[in-house]
Image (cartoon, rainbow, N blue to C red; front, side, top):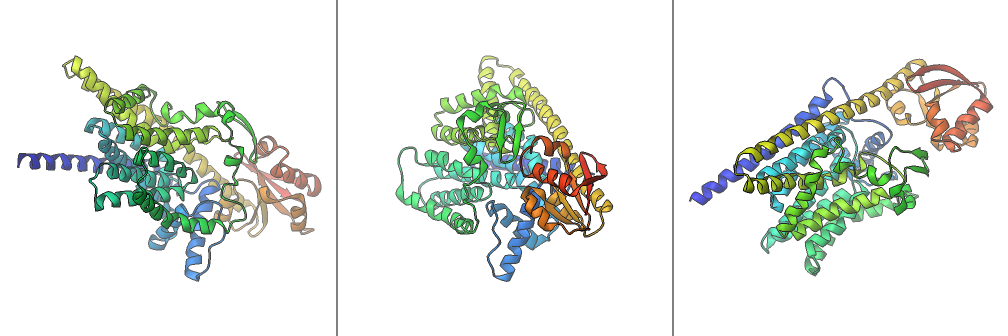
Amino acid sequence: MTYLSSERRYNRLDVTIVMLLFAGGVLLCLLLLTQTHFDGLYGQDAYAYYDFAGELRAALSEGRAPQPFFWPLGYPALLAATQAVFGTQPENGQAVNVLMGAALAPLVYVLARHIGGERPGALIAGLLMGICGQALQSSLVIMSDIPALFWATVSALALWKYKNDSIGTRHVSSLFWCALTLALAGITRWLYLILVIPWALAAWRGRIRWQETILTVVAASIILVPQMLYSRTHTQPVLNHAWTQGWSPPNALRQVFETVDGHLEYLTVNGLFYARPFYDSYYLAPLFTPFLLFGLLRLLRGQKYAALLLLGGWALLPYLFLAGIPYQNIRFPLIVFPVVAILAGLGVEYAASRIGRIVRQPYPMLAVAVLVIFGAAQTLNAGAHTIGTFIANQQADKAAAAWTGEHVPAGATLYTFGLTLTLQHYTTLNVYEIYYETPATLDQKWTRGQADYLLLNVWNIENQWAGRAPQVDYHWLRDTRGLTIFGKHGNFTLFKIKG
C-alpha cells in the first residue's frame, strides 16, 4: 500500500512538471509575440506552405489531384486541416506551431526520464529545450521545422517505450506509432528521414526481428506511399536538390560557395557553424557545453547502449549531412537539439551527484541551481534579442510591401525579387518574380507604351546574384527599357520602368 501511494505521488509530480513546462513554453511564445502583430508569414517559404495548404483544401473539395509542390506534403497537410477546422487566418497555423513547439520541452523531459535520467536532470533537459532560442523562433513562424521535430521526438519516445515494454500488444503498438510518427517527420522535412538509421540500430542492435520489421514497414508505408505517389507528379525528382547535388565532405571546412542561389560568403566554416547547437547561446549557453561529455559518460557507465545509439546517431548523422551542404542556415541544426538538451541535463545531474558523494553538503545542489539559472538567463537573453531582430526584419518586409502598394497604381505590373509572395498577399499588384524571368520573357510581357515597376535590393542583386538571372534581368530592364528611381524604402529601391 505504501508503494502504491509513493508511485502516485511520483506520477503526479511528473505530470505537474510536464504541465508546467508546456504552459511555460506557450507563455514564452505569447510574450515574444506581444505587441508585434506578427502572423507567422515571412520570406518566400512560409507563404509557399500557406498557399499550398489552400490548394490542398481546394483539390480535396473539388475531387482532383493537387498541383505539384516541391516540398513534402506533411506540413501543408497539417495547415490545411487546421484551416478546415479553425479558418484560413495565418494566426491559426501559427498557433499550431506554438502548441507543438511548447510540447517539445515536456516531451524531452519524459524521454530523458525514460532513458534513465533522474527528475532533476530530466527537468534541466526540458528547460533547455523550452528556452532554446531557435526552437522558440521556429514556433512563431509558419514553417515545417517545429512540426517535424515534434513528430521525431514523439517517435523517439515511442521507440524507447518499445524498448522497455514487456512483449505483447503494447510492445507492438509502441513500435507501430514509432514508425508512423517518424514517417510523418520525414514527409514534413526530408532531412528527418536520416533518423531511420539510428532508430533501427537502437531498436534491433544487431538482430533483425522480421515480424516487427514488417510492422514498421507497414506503418511507415501508410504515410510514405501517398507521398511517393504524389512526388511523381513533380517535374523534378525529389532528391534533385542543391543540397544533395552540392553535398561534399570538404564543404565542412569551407565558408565561401557558388550555388544556384549565387555567391555566398559566410563568417565561419560549415563544420563550426552547424555545431552551434552545442555551444552557441542562441541554442545552448556555453557553460553547459562541458556537461555534454558528462552526459555521455553517464550513459556509458549506466550501460545505456541503446540510448547511446539513438542519441548519438540522432546528433551525428544530421550534423554530418548539414556540414557538407553548400549553405548555412541557423534553423537547420534544430533537428539535433533534443539530444543536446538531454545530454546536458543528464551531464549536470551526473556531475552534481558525483560531487555530492565527495562533499556531503548542500553546496553542489546550490551550485547546480546557480548554473542553471545563469545559463538559462544567458540563453533567454540571446534568444529574445535574435527573435526580436528577426520579427522586426519580417515586419519591415511587410511594411515595404505596404509602402509599394501605396505608391504603385492598383493592378500595375511589378517585377521584384524576394518579396514576391509578400506583395502578392498584401497588395493588388500584378507581381512577377524576376528569378524565373529571362530577357526573352521580359520582352514578351512588355506592353509598349505602358510603364511597369521594379522593386529590388540593388546591392544584393549586384553582389550575391552577379551573372545570374536576377542580375541579368535587372540589367536588361535598365539597359533596354530604362529605369527611373521612383522611391526608396529601407534596403529596397522602387523603379519605374519606361514603356
